[in-house]
Image (cartoon, rainbow over all chains, first blue to last red; front, side, top):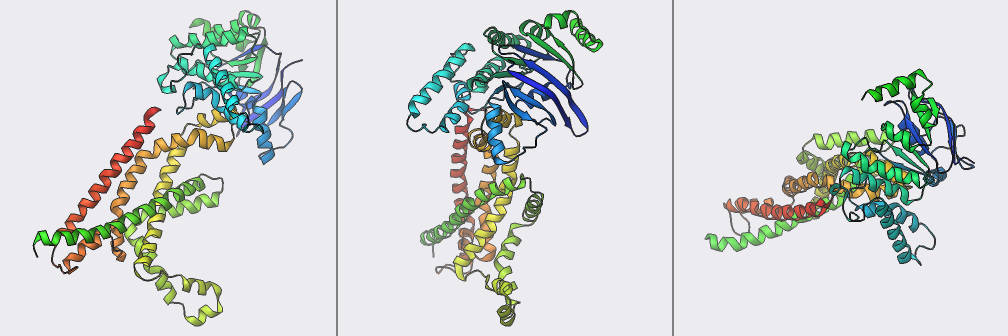
Length: 264
Length: 244
């Protein structure tokens, strides 16, 4: 059974159609990379999945639950705000510009959301110390996996870009999302720092983390993904096994796009 | 009377005046900081009418001299009330209400009027500073909070607030230091603050007349107060320098 099904997503900003009839599905443990030139709608698609944008049309399903059916109006009342919050947690999002909270240490960045969530549980008061300890240990574990065990108490401004992005990945993993999304995770980094971030993402892929990766790193997109989508002007232009798509693109537009990358 | 004889008398009188200055200073801060935040939130709300009203208020208050505002606030209600006859008020609840809106007499009435004018005036300046501080926080901070399942409230208090405080501290410090000195404007409605107390020695106060040095000496009070404030605010700023 697919873990994620996206059907006929359409989204416009004013007169501009940014997503035009996007459909795809993913199996659990699969890594999907999305490539395409800037402005092709890749980021907007990720933002729709994370409820940062609301599609005008289409259905998003995680496992069998319909998270969003844009055809049904359910806007901005209090109950649906709570609903959106809960639904969001199926997804994690790693931003291009990290968006770490500057006033918190690396560890606090990772544990903050989990702590806030735990405080809402009815048994919070009785098991407070126990729970906080567990959340803290979980955060430390995640940061260690990211190779940052000696950086836990540093503030974001004391870390390099690559380290910041790894903290951000740990933070996104802390709430155990079903699907982890990356929005050009290395685009804001110096070339020499991209490697450490890509290595971490590769490690996640090896442990069968379900991931969607929007990226301009073509080699990485090809090697790490089980499926690749090439987007152009809001549409899915080509989609399939990455080795196929990269070696033998069928669409003229895909050929042009990849050719430009091979030149560089 | 020699200077040595004058000094203790003047010193005591100025202290009394400065107490009134400090009172006005603290009351203004206590009122204007929260009111400014409310105005800033109103200015960013989705309600177009509310936004427009606040913009007009801010324009009027920041666009006209505080001294005139003090005069209007203090004398305006009384002048208005005096135009309403007792008969007119008897038949109209609204007119009766306007007629009853007067500041009480004496120093307490003057202090209330001055506090009112200062709070509104400073709230408008704070409002713009707060708005800048809130809007200056990158939108990515809010989005990061949202995708982590935080509520709007949690994002404001746990993520944005401290960043905002850090960003607005320098401009707010500036306003606070200006406020210390601006309190002297209340002299125009004869609030008995430190300048008033100093000036009184020109025209005979406590048996001293024609002495101008007490008026000059009031500057020392402002300097000391602002010196202490500068040190305190710098400490606060330093405390928040652990992040960027």
